[in-house]
Amino acid sequence: MGKTIIISNRLPVQLQISNGSITAVPSVGGLATGMKSVHSGSDSVWIGWSGLTDEEIPEELVPKIDKALAEHGSSKVNLTKEEVEGFYFGFSNRTIWPLFHYFLEYSEFELDSWTTYKAVNQKFADAILEKAEDDDIIWVHDYQLMLVPQMVREKRPNISIGFFLHIPFPSFEIFRTLPWREEILRGLLGSDLIGFHIYDYERHFLSSVRRLLGLEVSFNEIYLDNRVIKVDSFPMGIDYKKFSDAAKEHSQKPASQQSELQQRLNTHKQSDPEAKFFLSIDRLDYSKGIAKRLYAFEYFLNKYPQYKEKVRLIILAVPSRSNVPQYQLLKREIDELVGRINGEFSTVSWTPIWYFYRSMPFDNLIDLYTSSDIAWLTPLRDGMNLVAKEYIATRTDKTGVLILSEMAGSANEMNEALLINPNNFEQIADALYEAINMPKEEQQARNELLQNRLERYNVEKWANSFMTSLKAQKERDAENISK
Ligand code: ADQ
Image (cartoon, rainbow, N blue to C red; front, side, top):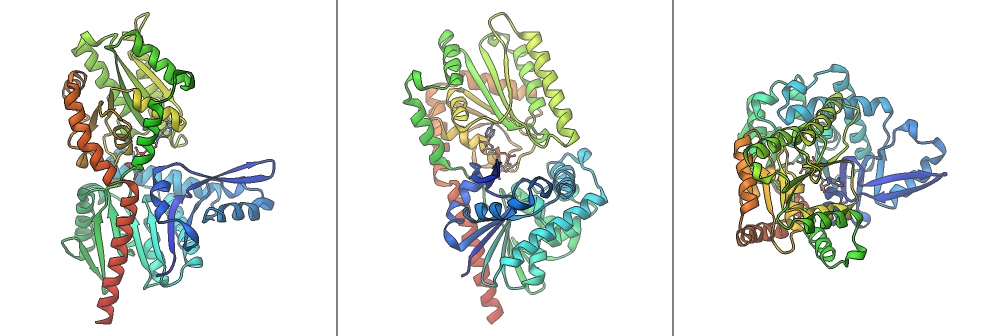
């Protein structure tokens, strides 16, 4: 077996350029962590975009940047500002992202951005081909790179290629509206193994392959040009230990070492031991259902007025894709809603919503997870949703209630949470009431089951089981060829 080549839109490191010196800082995201067991040592390379366009990188710094990236086993694909515009902000985030999250009305079908998407996918494929040997294993990630598997296959028919989609794959009725639907399917089918978070996405994909391409599909295998392509689900986990260890350490910190945020949270708790914190953390994205959640909160305060001055909703929204008009509109809608609800309900001693629009350091994330009685996550569609899993991992004394949308992939594995339909305000208000009043023993019994599962199926396990399945698929193919 040769080396492993991982490909994703963004590299797992961030470049920092100051006064002519370059540093590559590893990203802390779940994907980078999960891939550690796959991407380590000298027998793997990660190919992706650095986050800086060609125009932003001074020519003379290129060798230094390449060297800094190489130290982290990374290699960059160069993209111009125009390419990022058409490929990333255009086709990826104005066409595929809304469509695959069932926001058909937001999806723009523009020939120019499709053309750029194809050209940039070819750039990624060329970067792989430059480094790939026949016995290498290639793992392509996510919706920005769906044409890459076939582009590589054309030049290297025998190489082993896996693809994992981090977002939902929509039902046939939605997917069929895409003008370039066949090309996308053919691009993916260059893989030997195609992975999704859950069985439903797998099923939708197989149905589109059958109905749009007329290919032979048996159970979870597709037959194409003497190749067998396997489709399977691999629910992504989290770095459980990192979150539970951080929470344990956090609980032992003396007050003098606590963050300012933590001290404020403590002050509020101490002033009213019956007060409850509801927490929601998401990228500011229409798929996450933040606006609906605010309306549901208003509904709850009207239905259960006894909780006025008792509950507080903490919303942490991380800025995301702010170049895309839909995200700018959403930001405005949320700003207005928070203002209106706070204006309507606030008293001199109580502000119902605390709204943070920013990214927070890891320690503050832990402050929020460990201080919140209820995590309330209501995506309208979400491939998985790792925040739900992170919240549970930080509950060292096993208390806390998770209210989770049934439209999140993670709901499949988190039956012990209170699962809700994010469009049903009545049900949500009742779930909040139930969560506030849930006996401690019941919270602990539910969380114990959840924690055991999350600890076992952590992100490393996810990465390893995908790789094991991909290798097995290759071996089977090799046996078939030699027969
Ligand atoms: P996302 O849509 O980004 O991921 P999610 O799975 O919830 O959604 O992951 C968000 C990550 O960002 C979490 O690890 C969280 O800790 C971190 N984060 C959130 N707010 C933060 C903040 N303010 N500061 C710092 N970090 C913050 C996509 C898909 C998901 C799928 C993942 C993984 O949309 O459905 O679960 O990929 O496949």
